Length: 328
Image (cartoon, rainbow, N blue to C red; front, side, top):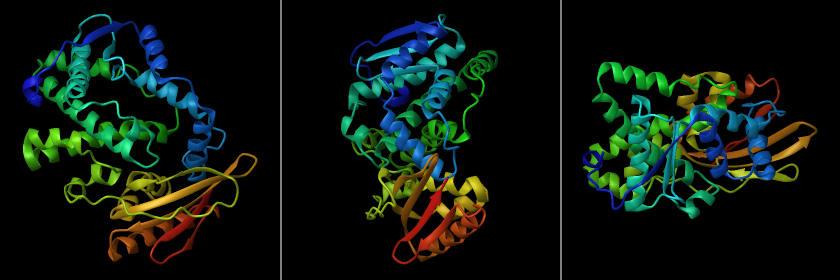
């Protein structure tokens, strides 16, 4: 691992192996108490976009998914590492290679970044994509050197939690940094080697667009400022969907291929959500694209998306930005 990253540990890392029940308890304790206001914000956005039913117990859904899917974690506050499992099985060893990468990079660059965590845009998601991509790359490299039997055993352990019965978008949001992070890290390494990867921790990506399209990261193509549109009620949530959010929204109704075409070339957006009545949420989003061709593709995708919404969504205006409204 140290050879893989070109870095050496500055000090030992405390590793604790825990039974499944104790591991889940420790995981829950590090997550802190659920914030009802934050949960309501996220529910309003996802429900308004048609990605979850408005009645979804979102806190329960995320806990269920994480309890089943997380098999190890490094806590940058306590500087300790926890793994689900009481023996050094092939799966536990593979997880350790991932989590120890977090510990190593934390010692050199610091992973606890409150300013990024509190940012209302996509900076936290983008930074997570970098860190998880780096750790996943190490894990995959470690597993590639295992015997065939050990690799099979590790993969079986990693999948032992099964697929939790939660809304698909919950799994997609949790899994996004792990899915795209490794390819982003590979692009950074190809661009400038380990020195460039280390520098990415000092100047991390700031949007899902930069994770999905590393060339936009190298070109410093940061999100364009977009004014927050008005709400037709008391505002609940304000943020940006980003390229990944726009893709998930479109893909729900018009399929992945059309969603990729409609979201590629995202330049920036800003939305506001509000409660439109009992059990009903709405969202208004203003989007700008990188160029005229991307704008045309967006309009085409949005038209298909709105047409398939049974009257729950419509394009409100076009011009320098495109504004649409969607309700649950």
